[in-house]
Image (cartoon, rainbow, N blue to C red; front, top):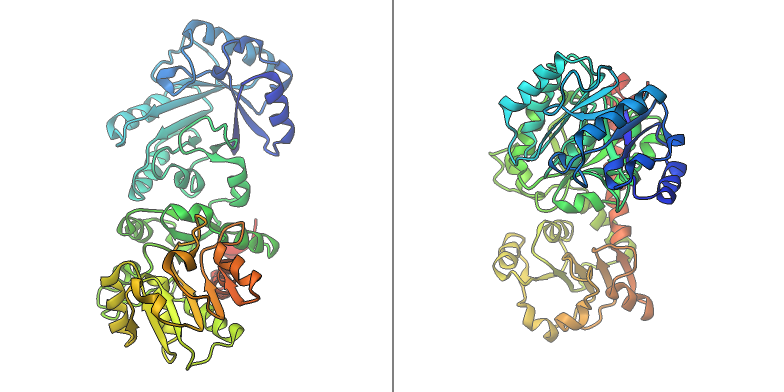
Length: 465
């Protein structure tokens, strides 16, 4: 049950959005219009939800409770649709009908366990069709608690997670035992942390069920822009795998790993890409005895194995650009990706530089390479430059900024819609290069093979029902 929430801004906006949606269930948020009683009734049917939310309930304006109740009664009588009523304000004499979604909203940063459990008890005693739970989710382990709460409800629950992990909670609603969740319109969402309909389409949210195999990318906020979301989900759909590749944002990897290990649908996970800033941290969490602590960017839960497909992609770069062992290579950066480049270029003439001099020197010592202070780069010539930093994402000119002489070969890892200035220099000067999208594709193809092997291993669990 995927519900598109449309704010009633005006009739023209309404007509346009209803026309373009492919979802059966639509919530009309009438509190966005002071003249909500003039809402065009032709849009209301059995799969409509009429919601008039007061400011205290997270609504757009102050609403007269008596008038709202009368309006609700009228549309229910005419169209047999559903209406949304805040459970704390609902009294049996208000609307004697089962056509209710009783909503529990708590905008506190932490879940009030007693209040939430009381709301479920109250809902269980009412003749409503659904209970809606809208609470802030700030840690993955809170999702386990929500699943237990949902089980206590005697009616289907619509879970509308909010807060830091609100989108994640909505994506996982089926695996948490929820009957449905809400999505919104880009630039016109009606609640905090509401997924947009475009995001829902990319993540194949409509097709997810409790048997869907789960995987995705674990990292910081950038996971929401990952090219993998569209790449893997498109392939899984074409191959008829009941599997999705999802963004798992976290700022606390221990919390994510703890949740992963404790959740009762752990057997549904096929694999995780790992990105900044956790490419090295994850090895320590999975194996505290690991003293080498090499960066990894892929974790397969079934076998508890880790891999580094970035190293494989760098090896393809070496072959593609025909980089010779004796040609000087400059690696710009000191993070996990720079270390992956050093691992691939172990037998090459490599130098490293970075703004974080201490980290750069540590890497140089670890891989027996020479560190060059960033202010001395202009005194050297390099055949190949590998940019393992975000420099270029905001239109910075790496060559000018760092006074680097134009090399003959370039690997520039930042990727965006338009070419970075460094790649533009390559094109203008007919220099061989690998850009961020090419590099990403090479490492993603390596991960895809392992993901598909894991899904095949899961057997019957991965075929669509």
